[in-house]
Amino acid sequence: MYLLDTHILIWFIENSPKLPEFLRNLIGRSDDLNIYVSIASFWEMAIKVSKKKLTLIDSVQDIMRICSDELHFLILNIKAAHLKELEKLDFHHNDPFDRLIISQAIAENMTLISADKYIKAYPVKWLWQD
Image 1: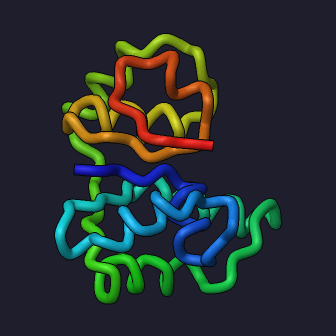
Image 2: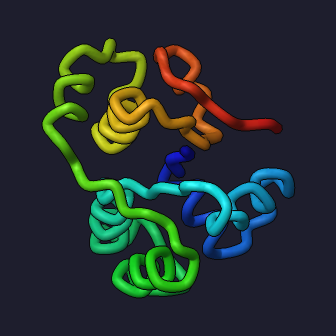
């Protein structure tokens, strides 16, 4: 099971060259694998779009639809177990969305796909390659 960090989701959806080819291929196998996206990622994108800190090719609502209907990604809602993990996390990273996504990956025993180097400071399975 894999959980995509917000920037990874955006890079995949927008076909960005920032996403390594092996990860693009892995994520593209969502019918064979369980690929999850946190509801926190959509929340984060919506806030950044409204503050004009992020421009997306599609609306956040369209991205949610594409993720679930076309790509068959699973949407991970926030659960009490995720918040329990969040309370235990050290503050190597101060971004609340990243911290929540890290907590979700830990609680659900998922591998987090992220380019964020702060991730390695946490007890989470992490996948990235430069």
